Image (cartoon, rainbow, N blue to C red; front, side, top):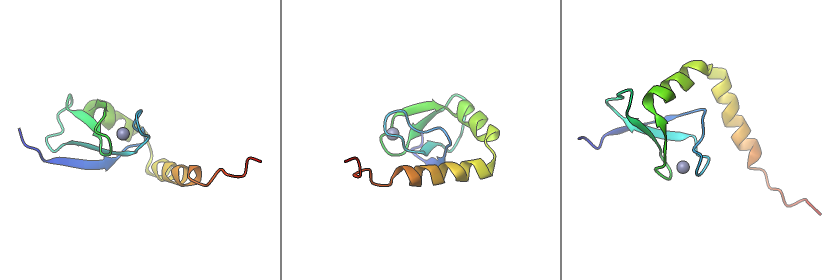
Length: 79
Ligand SMILES: [Zn+2]
């Protein structure tokens, strides 16, 4: 078993920490696990990830990044 893995951004976020950066083994077997690059939670299988990526147009993936940025604005204005 090699410890080489590849990181990629996935539209589906980690259910544990909400991170979109995932890692998968370089072999990318269909039943290899896709893990959160931040907290190491197994999010789905590579087969699932491939399907999600295939169904998501590039522009939509970039929109998701914008949404993440927008959600990070401070919320200290609730008087
Ligand atoms: Zn995570």
